Image 1 (cartoon, rainbow, N blue to C red):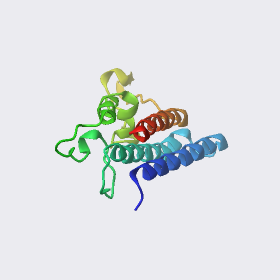
Image 2 (image 1 turned 180 degrees about the horizontal axis):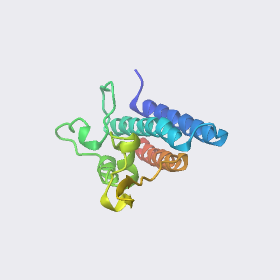
Image 3 (image 1 turned 45 degrees about the vertical axis):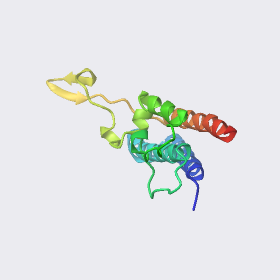
Image 4 (image 1 turned 60 degrees about the vertical axis):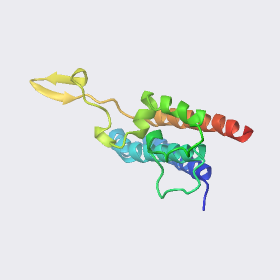
Length: 161
């Protein structure tokens, strides 16, 4: 059985492969960038969300790994009696309020992943047309880097215990 940390690292690696493939496809200019966003955006975010969930289980020191990782701290198994919630989990609870992590963990993705608000609608000839921000490999690369750095820092902290 793989450890939660190994599964988190594996999912980060899968996300890296997808981001690189996305960039390559964009450079080839054979498919519209919006189609590539739909094809790559969701799988990249799924890999990053799974990496996050597996790492949460590592921090929580889960002994029995589920078939799928949690998507957030609220889905973690309860802390055993007599033990305190690890400070890393408390930090993750705060991080889950950050926009970049909210976007990664949002289970509704694709063309619906960005909330459509009145401020984001353009009115053209009496028709409301959604004006959406596009997701780019660069944005997902930043998220990948943020998670990687966070995991490295917390791994160092865990290894000191």
